Image (cartoon, rainbow, N blue to C red; front, side, top):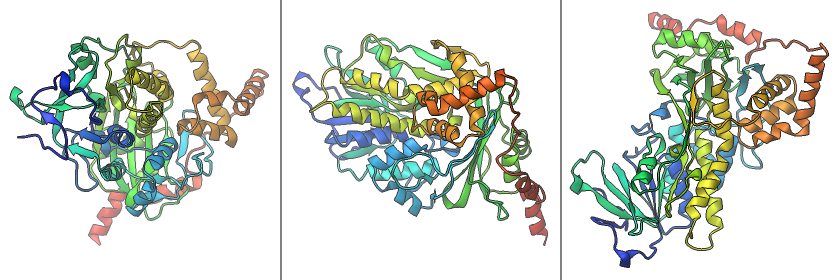
Length: 511
């Protein structure tokens, strides 16, 4: 099957010779997920042509695609991600709302390992419009459609990149070899010339192998073998819903209860429900097992809610056994005109909901580094970008890996940060204080929402009350906190009085 040729892309059977080395202002992005799409939007401001290569054929309407199996699970676009998305695509929030996305809702209630936090009226998202809640497929579809309104942006569907093509001296990348997806004949490979090649191909990226083939070696890697597994389905919110919260996030409680779960409101009045488990504990995908897993969460609110809600989709499972950070910024040598972004660099436990926002951070970092280049990116641009990207993703990686390591799972390649155990104990005290202190809770939630760095938890407005609590405890005056839940006792009692959704459906069918 021939590779589709769209627009004026330079595709040929062989790499260019020395006479063809003049810049043509063409960037190639490998991968059409959120990381690739947002980065392509930034590149569209600097390159006359941007070609996105993807193994899938993108759907004509919001729908799942084979190359993004995780899209069937709940995704959160955190406040920082919404800020960046709204700036890159002005008005996209209004488009999502017009398409049915939930809006004007309260932030989700967070139930931490030590209990429920008071919910602030809103995250500190700046002066932008109210946030939206939508599925990954709806957000990605609107981002892709907006991106394709840029005249220089084109997509090569059902196409896979098979390798980088180096310059004659091996110092920079001149393009990428591509072929139609599924083709095996060597003669089906073609050359796509580019002034910049970006790998945004996700967890399955083979960038280390490409770099080794070019003589640059492979990057060091940090791995956390979290053994995470999760299962998800959509529900219709019950008519008799008490309405005390719009969304809920329930964390596990190390070391005894590895179960976590969340309900996020999405478009068309639906709930996206995901259950997860750590260290090899995986939620079942059968009806009874799914509900039993939810029943054994540290907080009964989620179970009582979905017990009486109407299931809309089958239960689908997914596993992510490892979290990985590739330290490209530590490599001794790096080829010019090649950069790596998104999950191809850092792929971590998705249960923390950081993925789409971290992709947005990568695009923002690319925008910032490109802004320092007055013309075409010069020498060392690619290396500077990888170093800046490493700084941008350090906080979400620290949060995700630190939480996973609390379960005693194995890791490799990790550099133990001095005092990491002390920091973890301090954060636990922050959470205990946050249960009764709305200011401290807001500071913590701003870190979770990526609108503030983890270091903000050491500012006086957080540090002083936390230290005061510690001194009180040393003096023997610690006050026990009630094990309050996301839903009030009255709301839980009301839900427990209702028949289960399946029982109600059978009763209606018999009427």
